Amino acid sequence: MTETIKVEVAYALPDKQAIVAVDVSPGTTALEAARLSGITDKFAGIDLDNAKLGIFGAVVAPGQVLAEGDRVEIYRPLIADPKEVRKARAARAKERRAEEGAS
Image 1 (spheres, rainbow, N blue to C red):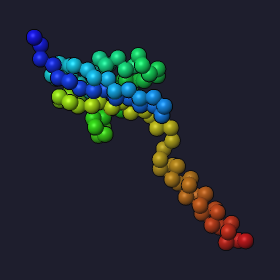
Image 2: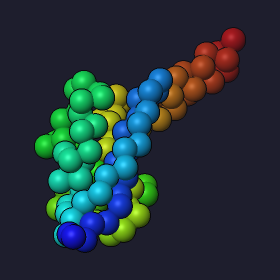
Image 3: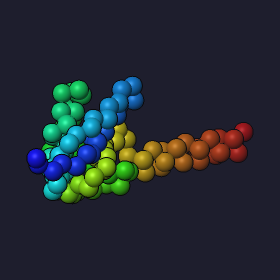
């Protein structure tokens, strides 16, 4: 019998999420586990070749070899750059303060 390790592959949208348990061979990478999980059949539009992957919240390379119990997380691309959002918010607050001071 071939030895396997148990890992999970997780993906989430705001309204739907899935964690898929997968038995893989030792030496399997994060990207290979994501492909083997079949999670792309449950969620349209996942681009595994370009997606960022992580293990328990820490970003890893697609070639990261997995250990027993690892949870591979597939991250969605950001809709907005957090730095740009903060800059815009600060600019609006500065404008409001200037308007209040002029009144």
